[in-house]
Image: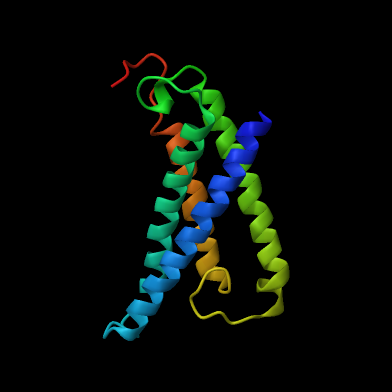
Length: 151
């Protein structure tokens, strides 16, 4: 279980950093295009999309890395539900700890970070909810049912 926890922490942190960098680049590019000022929802949409992909990638990579090797996708191997639960719980703890850290550093100080995560509290909350929602969807919606035949 310790291996699953450590692997999940590494994968979640790497995916969050990669999504944050990609989201910041996308927001900067959109800021210099003629779309600037067209809608404040554009930045929220960017962070929502990057959050969903970050959550799905992190869940799948952490689960695959933590599961025993075998045929097919890791979600159809024995013990996949236990591994998925471990990945999901560990990810929730990591993201909650990061949110608490960013609250203490940025959000409670009144820092105006425009639309970059983690500087901007509302954009960060959209990103965090998207990441955790995608991971929960990966565990409870996308994982095959035990009685369903594997594809």
